[in-house]
Image (cartoon, rainbow, N blue to C red; front, side, top):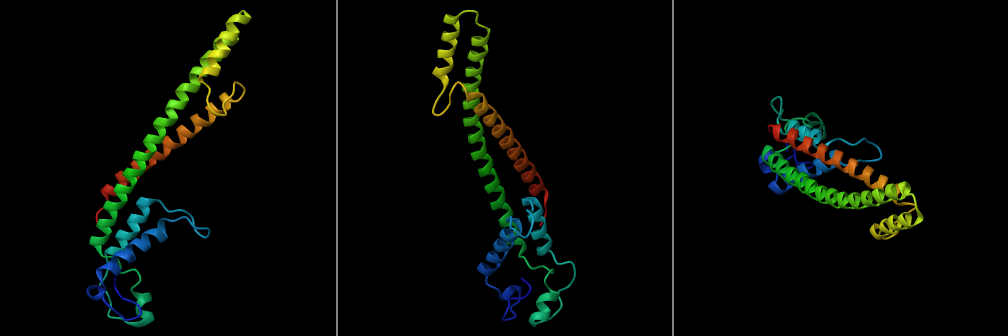
Length: 186
């Protein structure tokens, strides 16, 4: 931190805990979606924090409110804290990916089950006598659970396929974010 408002503290005088809170708060403020601003991606947020950790010119010896405004973009973040935050963010993304993969696996099992129902329906529609049709209808019902019915299972299957596709895209995006973040240098 350049200045500790309101007491005019400099980097070395600002408690380490305060520096940590400052970086965490800035990260949260940038990455959080708000009504008055659009969402900024995780890797773009990390880039902003890194820029704020590396002053581009010497810090002028200013004080007071005017000094805060002048120094607002000059090395506000402690680079060590930004590096630590990057590690935490990567771990958090990896955990989110892990949970999402578990969710994908559960969706996959439901999709497989409902595809079996679809196969029974296809066979039922091709059957040429009522006995075979009833056999395949009973097979369909055997694989249906909860609120699924012969009439609504295909709609439910479509919803699960859409959810699977969307979650897969989310996971791919998270992997891309990790690749970008790991390339960043503080």
